[in-house]
Amino acid sequence: MAGAEGLTVRDAVVRYEGTRRDAGTTAVDHVSLDVAVGEIVALLGPSGCGKSSLLRAVAGLEPLAAGTVSFGGQDLVRVPVHRREFGLLFQDGQLFPHRDVGRNVAYGLEMQGVPAAEQRARVAELLEDVGLAGYGRRAVATLSGGEKQRVALARALAPRPRLLLLDEPLSALDRQLREKLAIDVRDTLRSTGTTAVFVTHDHTEAFTVADRVAVMDAGRLLQVDTPDTLRDRPATDRVAEFLGLAGA
Image (tube, rainbow, N blue to C red):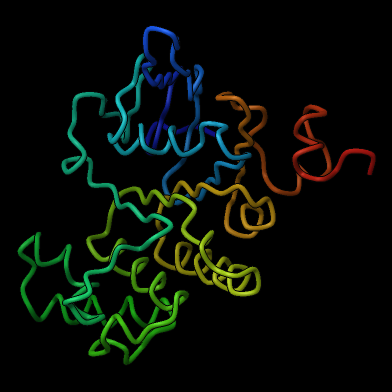
């Protein structure tokens, strides 16, 4: 799938320097990936496979040792994080405890100088999108874990980022809630037309949320395909093993 109008990663390498006794680690090893505008791609793999390092490199939080990252044809290697116009959502939504729900969602809009009336309308729209209509005046401390992540998602979407990067956003929740919220996240991203990269170690979660899934292991991409293709035609034994399909 062509990524000329969306995210294009080419031969990306991320290394973490070691010590005199340790040569260091190559966390991302010559990875290339395209994400089209409006597409949701999951980076899926076991802990330590490099998926979060790749996401952080796309965000600009980790430097590339080699390769390129671009969006809409613009090379981003020298563009700082705050100028990439990307949204970030992590495992801990990191809400502001001194702000109510509505003002948390409005934070990015305030930073952009959006007029108050437009802020209120956008906040109301997004709270409805994430299933929290009427929650604007609630204190963050009164929310459940799932509700907090919904607020964090709304806050990340409020400034209309051209790309949303989600790093294990549901992993701190219990299994039943994760499954429900994965569906809600997918529906919200699709209804808002958001281009997104979603990092997870859970293949059920990845298959629920994403249009395509990129399976990683030891810093490399093993296969990038739709969930149905991955289930029916895993490219390698390692992909089949990780997805629980080995011997099926």
